[in-house]
Picture 1 (cartoon, helix red, strand yellow):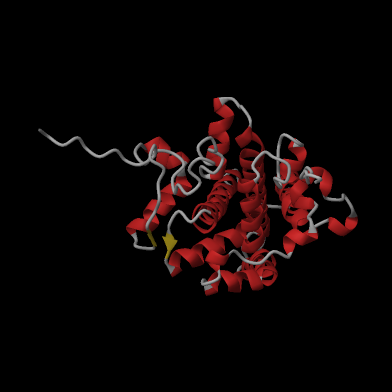
Picture 2 (cartoon, rainbow, N blue to C red):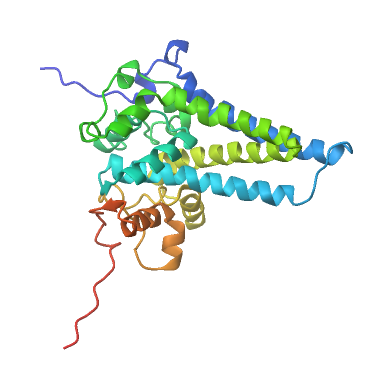
Length: 309
C-alpha cells in the first residue's frame, strides 16, 4: 500500500498569476510601500519648498501616530490570536467590536481564513503541510504564503466555535467593504474636513502616511517574528524588539506547549506587562467584565502567597 507523503506547501502551491491573492499583495507589500514613500516625500517636500509650512514637531507627532497605530493593530491581532483562535477566554460584545475594528485597521483579512491557516500551522508545525514553515523557505514563511494561496484553503468555512458570534460573521461577510470604508473613505473625509477648515494638508498627509507605514511595520514584524524567527534560535535583542513590535505575539518559545495562554509573559512585573501589552489588554478587559474565563499558562500565572504558619 502506497504511503502518502505530504509535500512542502512552498512547493505544492503553484506560483502562477491565478494563485496570486491581490488583496494580500496590497496589504503586505504595496500599501506599506505607499506609506514609506508618502512619509519620505512629505518630509522632503516640506523641507525643500518654502511655499509649504513645515514645523519640526510634525515629525515626532507623526512618530507618535505611527506608534499608536502599531499598538492598535496589535490589539486586534493579539486578541484574535489568543481568544478567537486559541480560545483562551470569552469576550463580551464591547471587546468583540473593538477587536474586529482593530483587525480591520490591521488589514488581517477575513477571520475564517486567518484562523484556518493558523489551525493548519499548529497541526503541522514545522512539518510538510505547515502553511509557513521557515525550514522550507524563510521568504515563503515571511510573505510568500500570503501572496500565493491555494484556492481550496480559501473555501474552508468559518471555525465552528465562531459561528454563534453574529458580529464575527457579519464582519467576515462585509470585510472588503469595511476595509474600503476604513482605509479610503474615512481618510478622504478627514482630508476634506481639514481642507474646508483651512488646516494643513501636508501635516494630515504625513500623519496618514505614518499610520500606513506603522501598520506595515506591524504586519511584517508579526509575520517575521512569529512565522520565521519564532521557530529559530535568535539573539535576545531581536526577540525583545520583535516582542515590542508585536505586543508579545513574537514571544513564541512557550506557545506550542500552551497555545491557550492569554499571557505570553508572567502576569507580574511592569516590563512583562509593557512588552506583552496584548496580554495586558486582556487583563484590562477582564477587569472591565468584557472578558471572562481567561486561561493562563502555569509559568505565567501569579504565584499564590505562602500561607503563614
